[in-house]
Length: 199
Image (cartoon, rainbow, N blue to C red):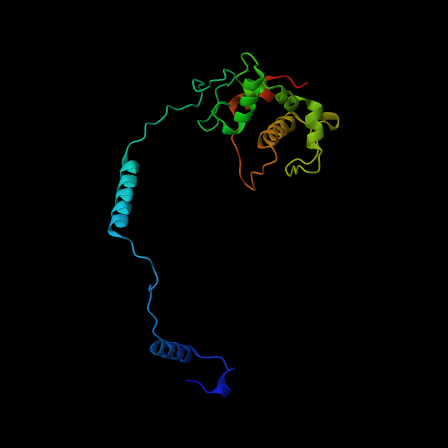
């Protein structure tokens, strides 16, 4: 044990270990003294849940046929075949679009089953809206911060990307995805800027 005059001097590793062991000898420390114990019934239930989870993971999952290059999965009838399975997504499967589909159903629009038929979708294709959106300070375009088209206009690629981003802001309704997070947009929305003429 150290004297009171030695209190401010740093301990060596051997002294610290000896002092710690001395404290343990004089204390009645018992590990896990206050940990709750499971009853026999709780232990049996935990084991049953673990066995059920293991059995569930062992079951073969029926695989969905590949979606790439076909559009059998489309229920809105406006999706085009996409190159990858991940991109092959219909607006009816995209949960973030559900509020738009609900709005169309409530308004009683006949035959409007695709979000691209929603009246609010049109501005996402309007070149003046997209041009204005591209130039807002809020949006940070790191790769091409300036219009790359002729006569100071946006290039076709910039219009397309701006349209996607504008649509995403609309369906997120102010929610932020966070840095590095990406969403795959429905095929009908992706094809919208390509297949419909910008107004």
